[in-house]
Length: 275
Length: 75
Image (cartoon, rainbow over all chains, first blue to last red; front, side, top):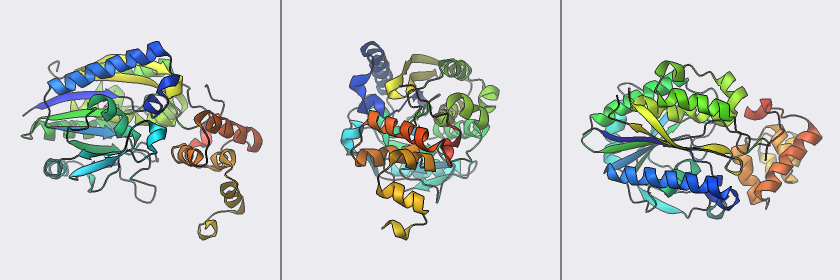
C-alpha cells in the first residue's frame, strides 16, 4: 500500500497556549488551514500516522541524544507539559507497536535509528494532533530528529532519512500518513521570542515546495542560526517530509507570521501524484 | 538539594533565588527554562521580560545554545 499522505505543520505551544492573543484574522486563517489538512488527512484513510517531530528534551536529553528515533509502543501519553500552560488536556494516544517494529527493522537496513518503548508527547506532537486528529483516535508512531542539542544531523542526511522512511512506508501493507512538525525561523523561549524572518522562511518554503533536494540538503547550521535562530534547526523535520515525498511538490495552505505564537505558522501538504 | 549537583556558587544562588534572567544568561536552554519559569509563577510576558532584564543586568548569554542570541526580542 502506498504512502497515502505527507504534510507538514508548525507546532509552537503558543498556538494553543496563547491562542486568544493572536490577531483574530491570522488565527482564523491558520485554523482554517488546519481544518483543511485535517479533512484531507482523514480522506486519505490512513491506518497509522507517523509524526516526524523535533522534541524539546521531553524524552531525549543531553545524556543520551540520538540523531533519529522512532517510538515503538502500544500507546503514548501527552502532553508532558502543564495542561493549562499548553491548553491541551493530558490523554493517552494509541500507538501501533507491530507497525513500529516492522518500520524500525526495515529502516535499520539504512539508518542507525534509535527506538523507544516509552515516549511522552510534548507540544511538538500534541499541538499538531490537537488540530489534525482532534479525537486523538488515529494510531500514532512518533519519530524524533534531534533539532535541539548540537551537533545535529546534517540536513542532507535528514532528507535521506525521509527518503528511506518514505520507501519503507510505501512497502508496508498498512496505509501510512506522515506529518512533519517544526518551525521555520524562530527564537522560541528566548528574549527574541516573536521574531520571525519572513524573507528567510519564504525562501525556504520556495525550495521546499519545489522539493529541491540539493538546496534543502545544503542548509548549514551556522547560517541557519544567524538567519533563523535556534528554532530554525527544526527545518530538518520539513526536509525529512520532502525526502519521504520523493520527487513530489508541495502546496503551502497557510503561512502566517504570528509573533505571539513565536513562529511563521505553516500548514502544507505534498501532492503525492505530482512526482 | 542543589548541593548534590555540580553547580558553581553563582548557579546555585540563581536557582535558589529563582532568578530567571541570570539562569538564562548562565546558559539554561529556554525550552527548559520556560517551564521552570511557569512553575515559579511567571506568566509568559513576565518570563520574556525576566530574560531581557537578565541580559541587561548580567550581559549576554555565557554558555549553551543561546550564546549567540542578540537578546533584543520582538514582542
